[in-house]
Amino acid sequence: MTPPATRREARAAHLLATAPVPVRHARARRAARIRVGFAAVAAAALGIGGAAAITAAVIAPELSASAGLVAEATPTASPVPLPQAVSELPAPKVEAAAAIADLCADPAFVAALESGDDEATLAAAGGAEPFRAAVASGTAECVSLADPARLWVVVNKARASDPIDYRPGGLAAPAGVRDIAGGSLRGEAAGALADMIAAARAAGAGEIALESGFRSYATQQSTYGRQVSSRGAAGADLVSARPGYSEHQTGLAADVTACTYGCDDMGTFGGTAQQEWVAAHSWEFGWIVRYVEGRTEITGYSPEPWHLRYIGPELASVYHEGGWQSLEEFFGLPAAPDYGD
Ligand SMILES: [Zn+2]
Image (cartoon, rainbow, N blue to C red; front, side, top):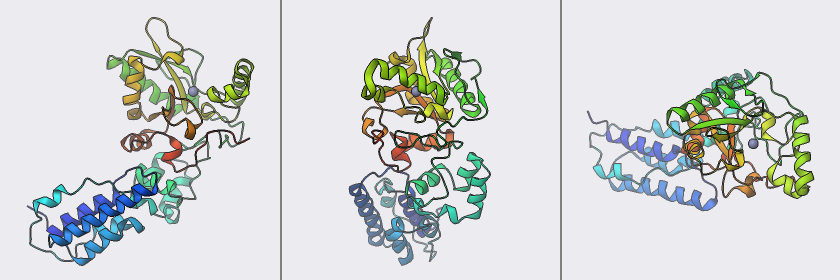
């Protein structure tokens, strides 16, 4: 049975208003408004939908909780079937209106956040994309991207670990994973890495080893110190984090490498079958490739196809589907090209 025209039109407007697409500058936002405007005009021209639905479509990107408003906009049960042309409206390419939801005013969200359960927190936000969008829009001030215990922590050259010598609890070695340097990770990341590496092997992509996982503040002091000795301070900053500024200190970062009989240095990971598989599939296991081509000015790091960051499957899925290229852009943070001193 065909649903009432107004309902389908409202659904189209809802899709237009909530599609998760990274919008990085004003031009794209203007384009989004133009497309939404087009949808409303098209609906009016086709003589379907009530005035309320059209109004909702026009103002949707500007309103908080507009998704709900649009979805409920079925003012009259018109028997007129929806013309086929409407299903061929431009694909949804609009900044997520859900971004403006005030999560921190929602007691259920705050309770989930304060429980420390990351998965429950994302669920209470309505999913990882509404969570991301709210954080990126600056309306979720109760969410701290500096909390090192959360999956959404962001550590970069402008954001040191807090505290500077933070050490996560529950570190574990990934089971069944070749381990070159005694690597451990936070428990959930260790399990996800083991699963990812087993899946790569099963897919015929070859063997992958963990070259380096958690690194303590003290370890990073000596690692960075060695790089300064051989490259100088500026050269060291391009390849190694200063103590307290390494993602490895969160226990959520893993450097992986390809193995045939022996294992190669991670610096040769790029271009291997293992690297290509990781680039395409790591998100399915909650990992992202943190430092990619073309984002050095934002992340502060040259591309590192071997350096993976665990953000959990929900956020990683949104990251992948949105085509995001850096965690800074994903969460609406400023670029962190250098230490600023
Ligand atoms: Zn690394």
